[in-house]
Amino acid sequence: MIDKRKVKQAFSAASSRYDGAAHLQREVGAALLQSVDWAKQSGTLLDIGCGTGFLTGELLALAPCQAIIALDMALAMLHATRDKLAANAKVSYLCADAEALPLAGQSVDAVFSNLALQWCYNLDAVFSDIRRVLKPDGRILFSTFGNGTLQELKTAWASVDAYQHVNDFCEENQLHAILKQAGFRDIRSQRLTYRPRYESVLALMQELKQLGAHNVLPGRNPHVTGKTALQRMMAAYPGDPVIATFEVIIMGAKR
Image (cartoon, rainbow, N blue to C red; front, side, top):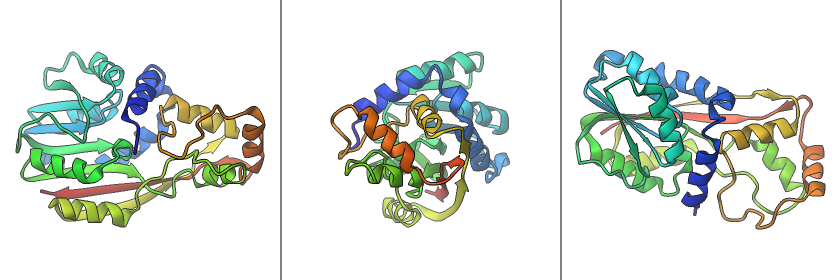
């Protein structure tokens, strides 16, 4: 089970430096927004996992909505969003967990989430609750990481020890099944692959830390990883130059 306390701590600690490292998040967010018919996005929108407010700001610019709820479980991230968007009266701010939304049923017209739901342990609960708060025919549109993400880093660590150093993520068919089980229909998806280059393996790991993307699953090494193990992993990292694979799944569905 994902340790939510550690997730909150990691993203709160990353809030001040997040924007400087979140190049992929912005690129994925832009791809997410390309599939939206903005003329239909009126009413109240919910941005789950708003982070420092990139997607919330884009929604404000693009959607003819009456209100936007920016939600994040890390209070420091929410403060960063509020600092950016405080001048816009359409936005309200909510510190909450996506697995237990403190919102009334059928109170939201559309739900958006950019690279946030992979940090939720119980996706059945997440999608059921999202469907609860959506109005009839309301839509959810989200992006998340697929299980091919950071495969090079997984391979490198596997040559060093048996601990889990990299988080696992859902497959596209798993997400489709969970959405269907929750009662969603008209489910659509697309898969994108990003393979950015890094100056070194250390640079990749530093970026992951700046984003708050730490390993928070069982099976991780309970002790601090030693310098020798880290050096062995970096030596085993496949490929030159250093490239990291990020598999992204974009999905949309209707209530």
